[in-house]
Image (cartoon, rainbow, N blue to C red; front, side, top):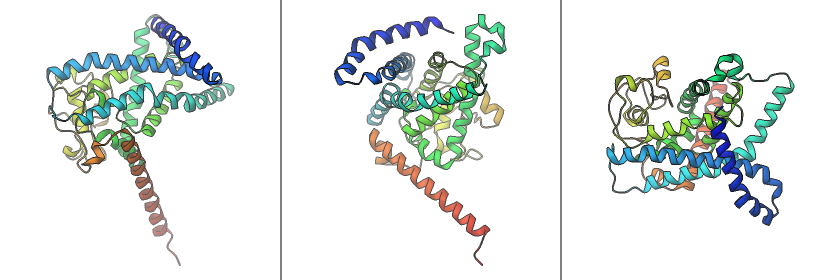
Amino acid sequence: MFDWLVRQIAELQGVVFEGAIEPTLFQLGLMDWAEEAFDGVGFALFGALQIMLAYLVCRPLELWRPAERWSDRGPVRTDVVYTLIHRLGLVPMLLFLVLTPIGAVIDGSLRFYGFVPPAIEQLIPGLAAWPLVTLLIYVVIIDAGEYWRHRLQHGLPWWWALHSIHHDQRQMTLWSDDRNHVVDDVLATVWRGTIAMMIGVTPAEFPVVMLAFPLVESLSHANVRLGFGRWGSALLVGPQFHRVHHAIEHARPPYDGTRGCNFAVIFPIWDAIFGTWRRERVFPRTGVAALTGDRIRCGYLRHQLDGFSRLAAALAHLIDRRRRDFVAAFPAE
């Protein structure tokens, strides 16, 4: 599927690896890592393609009709750092050094016991001649999973402790999509990768299938006063739809700060089906009311450390609550 695009990326991947990465590995005596480094170059190239497409589509819109204007864009620059690290550096490295070997072991074990995930083209043979339709089916299935992952990020206290880093931003722009704690990003990657593996998406197809997600997510976070109208907003998540989701401090019952609203990533239909669509044509300010000051204006490393602190506090609270429930259920004689 989409063999041409995969071939073009593969050719560029080979040129970059042979021209820059392989000689460096040889000089440092790290040729044992050549295969992982080669795969990492491929994902970094897809990340660069995602960034380029998002900027070309979203930045002109932000300049045309911004939802907000700020004199100090320091927090926005921090989000740019997030994007570069999470799409070109840290997360791809973790993916290939840690998650890819684990995924290969799991996939091999499943196949050893006779479970071979069927590709959509095998279930519906006629789709082999319609690669765009196949891509859309893959995207719809993964997007349904993404909706529920997003619901869990808001509904589970320990996961919200990590995800709240993303919602801290009060200057939301096209760069804000990647403003995530690294553990939150790894969990999201595992979630998407597992769904893709279960529906038969091959490792070569996975980056192509996932191209639509960062582009739509960058657009939905863009600082632009733009809605898609009554019918368009029912087909695709846009800036107005998602901005309401980020306005947690403005949420009204039944969309409180824990449950939220407008969780869909690409297709709003999931919010319509499961009753979480808040249909308001407003462009509210974004952020979390309880968090102010340096905690939301600091740099990347401080954010990451703060995320671990929030996670530890959430887990400590959960353990204490479980202990109190146990004591209440089994009081001492």
